[in-house]
Image 1 (tube, rainbow, N blue to C red):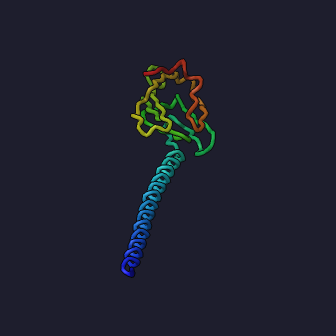
Image 2 (cartoon, helix red, strand yellow):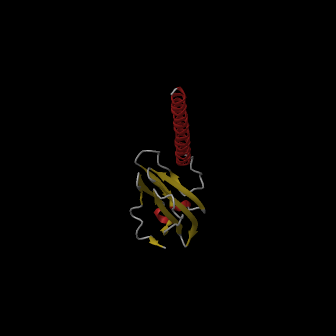
Image 3 (spheres, one colour):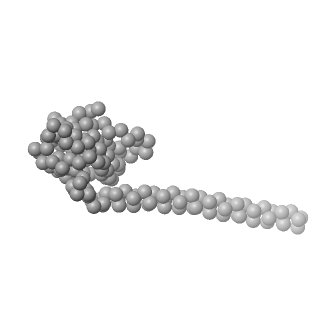
Length: 154
């Protein structure tokens, strides 16, 4: 009978140890995932807060976590790429430069889509005479109002 008690006690101790190991592994995995998410979030914030290069066509970026705006300078339409991050995604721009007095650029938006292929679905040819445009940014994207006559789906 004493041997059976010892066996049960050892079995209970073994179960407790295995449970503790499982909990420890679970906390490690979850903690690592949270840390990775924080790293991605911090990189997105840093990219959003970057100082805009004087050569960039986007001359104002939104502040993280706030409804804000961007300014696109069509008269300074230098070849280059820009990304604007917002609450649930990002919009990617590829500026091709000025052609026939028009700022030519492409853009595409992803909202909570980790499998987004990076396609820039809109092509815009905006007259440089417009000089610049200010567009509202919220958690769901950039409201590119007033550009519909200059932009088309690719």
